[in-house]
Image (tube, rainbow, N blue to C red; front, side, top):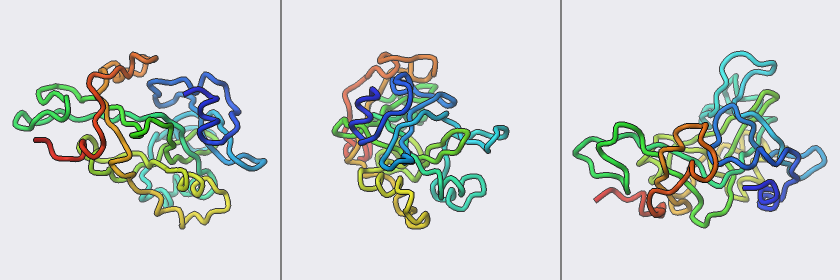
Length: 229
């Protein structure tokens, strides 16, 4: 998505270079656009490094944080109170682990594959959406939660997807931090679609549309959630 598309989709002022928006295969440590409250009111899109660490650097740089424990974690609690942000995306990737030989392939996944199968997960209507995040001076991380019934067939966690109302609450500086914990839930499976994509996405060096080239037709989230035949 371009900077203009992101600004229009989220009603935010773009205050970072357009290049940070044009990612097909974003990877940790890269600079990405982040939605956050603007000092003058409203929302802004500002560049931030994907990787959260203590101010001044040093130590681990997690790219994700468990939403169940972040509010009380010594590492993330300050950001939960004063550094709530959101990552604007058009989709995210998850990788399906190789299945046992006796298990049927999962919508085009190869049961005999020796490596994980990449899936692109988007909104069913194809529109941009936002993932809950925490930021500090050093960078940001994405908050995760338990998976919905569809994502659970691929992975045991998923990003916290914020709908418009939840996004407004999450980014409201006046919101009571403890009251925001109910937002940390999996989005409905029927709100998503799943597309098997090329293995090129496995390498962060691969960028451009070819990195997410479809290998099969998209599968609706409700269908994906159903047990394989």
